[in-house]
Image (cartoon, rainbow, N blue to C red):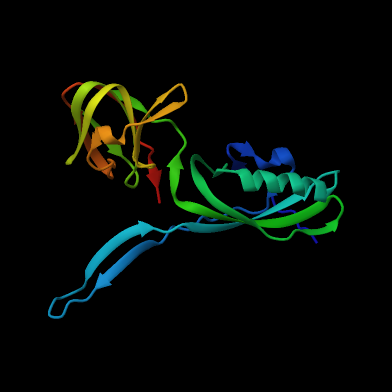
Amino acid sequence: MVTIRNWNLITNLDGEDTRKFDVYQRERVVVPTPEQETEHIEIKGRHSSLTKKGAFKDIELPIEFFFYENTSFKAAFRIAKMKFFNAKTLGFNDDESVFYKIKSVKIDDAINDVLEMGEFTVIFRLDPFQYEIADSSRTITGRTTLNNPGYESQPIIIATVAGTGKIYINDQVITIQDVNGTIIIDSELMNAYRNNNGIITNLNNHMIGDFPVLGHGSNVINFDGDIESLEINPRWRWV
């Protein structure tokens, strides 16, 4: 039998409140902290082990939902399943400043004892990070320091260039060669390209160096040569 717990908790799929399609979050959820891959290497004669820290693993988050309206549960459940399976991001009204990226979704069988009532569990597989919703993009025309309040981020940078120049982020150096116009450097996609009204041009052969990251704390950013300005979306994120 369905037990109604809370009408005020909100789950957002791609920014859309699930209550709009008659689905309600049953209980407040606790999002687990992702596990970091760690290797400890024991060396004979050495005190303590060597530690190598790696990437964070995806997190799995089950959420219970219920439906209670004056229409058929089965019809509403069909609509809800399409919403969940097509969603790219997940958010909650008790933490509105961040969102999670959905990797995959599993929906358990629904309990439907009464025509207008039902409940089901959705198991989300999520990217390990919480991403800031607010747009922190800024245009840089000279030496600038950006303070990263969270974990190491993978920014997207749009450089306006009239030739060749270098971008400096702390001790990272990225060289842009023979570009007239803009080049987009996307560290998350690990891709350098130009987007001209939806027409994508591959510019990876015009970039030398690793795709930059913004570490926790202060990041000193500068550029030289024929680079005129940088537009940086830092994509702040947390674990």
